[in-house]
Length: 229
Image (cartoon, rainbow, N blue to C red; front, side):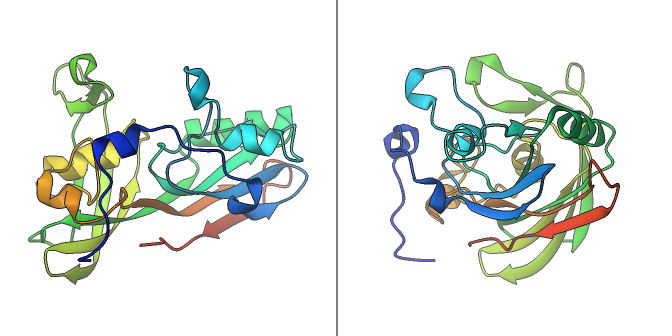
């Protein structure tokens, strides 16, 4: 991984020029839903500031999909599979599936170091930490339940490729959970130490699999999208 330019903190925070919709890959579409491969450095929904209006749902709404409605979100730096509804009934049913944990999700990540075991689980409660916003922290008294399963896919010297399966859906859950066991994600500007941050020019976290039931037909659907790192 040597030789890759590492963005400075200012680079990471700088507003990005809008990309054309052609650079947002549509993995599947039908009358009820859209399944998108969201690129990194793109918000799922508009931010509060005017210069953060550019986002996935806005691009879709302004480029042929005015009815697109967000169902769940991926962090700005996280890439990969995200589903949007195309009508109110589908939005309601898809939202219910996510709320009731009837969907299945898997993420691919690169983490610093080598875990002793090949797989495991992390069951640590999390909460938002206003003094260090937008960071989240483990808090056994005030945190909300969060559970993640992890599995090593490949060991590569100073880092390894892992599969992460979140059972709950807390903000920054995967990033904080891996940090908590001493293996921060590469390129993570919020949680990685200097070596892990410098090891890759983007956050190495990608939503690589999503399984859900079609909101109109009930057919079980599975979508996969390989990580770009």
